[in-house]
Amino acid sequence: MLLYDLKEGQSGKLTALLFDTKLSERLRDMGFCEGETVSCVKRAAFKSPVLYRVKGSLIALRKSEALKIEVVL
Image (cartoon, rainbow, N blue to C red; front, side):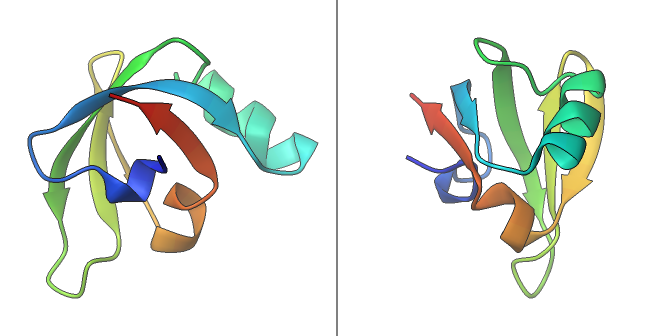
């Protein structure tokens, strides 16, 4: 399942970041590490960006970015 597939209020555990090394490293610095729990907080009116909570922080990701992050429920 992809991060973008989470519905508002739903949580999952991160399993993989499918980005090039630079962006993947930046997301890991913000708390998007394998095994971390991430929650979908709010979707924008046109479904992008989406606000996620990870490690107590709120981070907005574009749909294109959220489609490259794998999670399990």
